[in-house]
Every structure is written in structure tokens, then in C-alpha cells.
Image (cartoon, rainbow, N blue to C red; front, side, top):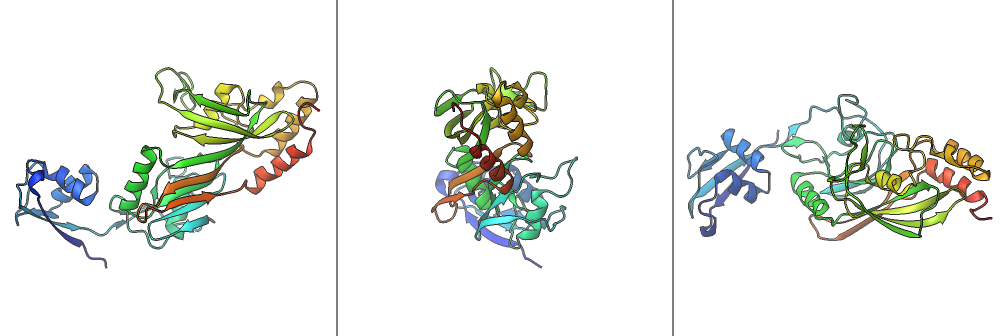
Length: 324
């Protein structure tokens, strides 16, 4: 059985007057609520006595804390196939398959990425005091590709801070109906909840700032293969921004389920052929760049199109290009 970690901290002169929960949170690099919880559980002493979270230690005061080992998660490990493309003591990068939900929810209590990670990773040291993987960012169920996952609190906080500071760079491959107006298009348009359809997002006044850069890689007969580079990370950002441009993601059954029927002439049959060959939204997280939270090493991981989207792309390339 794992024993609690014992730590002793001395209050410095420039820290006088700060509340104990705030001071402890900064020293342990945990949330303030987590620090308050440790105090309430009797795991913290101030000069040998039980303190209150609002106490304000003086310079030279001695704070002792017993950090409990992480508790087992109530979630069940499941032997779900998982492609791990990088793993070390602090984190792992996985290549998520399409159709896999990231977090358990009332509609999907099992069979998720978290359940798979609990089975696949044997050296988790706890996130928020619970033995579980730390999901740093998410992908939609039907979006495939790269995700970074933390194994412990320190890595999770560092990676989350990098993400918030927009230093985690993410790029996607997407197929968009029609043709972008230029080979490179930058979209800076705020995203929020759709005013009437609550399961959808939309470009709306007063939404959260969202910026995406689109680069055309290939021009097909009635669609483009594009690289999407995120500057922000809003829900459905790429899908909403491409819809805003008038070129929604091929296969996106939420935002443009029948877009292929809007083409006329010879493009109509080609679009129907592509739609038939795309089993889900044509969106894949192809590149992930971040700074390793422990070593400071620049990390770059890439993933090619998975077989289902690769087959559709090869079919599209084999058809006559636009303008011929």
C-alpha cells in the first residue's frame, strides 16, 4: 500500500499575510480548492497545530503536509485497442481512432478513451488526487488523430498552461466542399452556442475569439484538401469556420449533412461519389507540437490520414481535377 508523501515547507518573508490555502496551492502547484481540501482533511499542520484555510502564516512558520496517494478511479479499465505513438514518465500521445468518445458521460458511461487509457497505462500517479489520465484537450467522437495525455498533476498543469497560452500547436487535415477563395485563408470569427440549435456552435457576435488558418494542399473536382492550423481551440472550431466560409467539412452530418447535393452538372455525381466514400467527417488531427513539461524539449508528433480517409482521398485524386 502506498504511503502518504510528507512535505515540510517554511514560510518566506515575502509570503507573509497570504492565506494558507492560497500559499499552499502555490507551493504544491495544485488548485486552491485541492489545498483547502487537504487542510479540511487534517493533512496540514501549521507550527504543529491544525490550521484553518483562512489562516495567514508568518515568516518562518513551519507548514507540514501529508499528501495522500491517489485514489483508484471509479471508472473501469477496458481493453480497447489504442495506438500510443509516444510515452514517457510524464505523458503520452495517442492517435485516437474515429468513433471513440473521449470522456464517459451519461450517454456513454463505458467504452471511452479514458477507459482505454486506464487499461493501457500502468504508471499513472494521479490527477487531482485520483488515479486517472489527465485529458489536456479533446477531439470530437468522429474526429481522429493526435491527443496529448498527462500521467500526473504536474504534467497536466504544465500542459494545460501551455495550451491556455496558445503554445500547443495543433494542425488538422480536412476535406472541404467546393473551393476556398485563395490558397491560404485566415478566419478570425468569434464562436459561441448556436442561438436556436443548442447542440451546434456558430459564428456569433459576442462569442469567444477564434482564429484558424486554412492552407489548400490539394484541389479536387468539387472539394479541397486543406490543412487547418488552430490559433485558438474552441468547440467545433474548424467545422464552424469552414461552414462560415461556405465550404463545410465533407461528411459533417451535424453542420452540412446534404451539402454534396448542392452541386450541379458533372460535379454533382463526383460529389455524391465522394460523400459515399467518406464514412464520417473528414477531419484528422495530423500534427501536435508542444514543450515537454519536465525536460523543456520541443516535441513534434505527426500522424498521416487513417485508412478510411486515405481511401477517400485516393479516390478523389483519381477523378478529373477541377477545371479540366
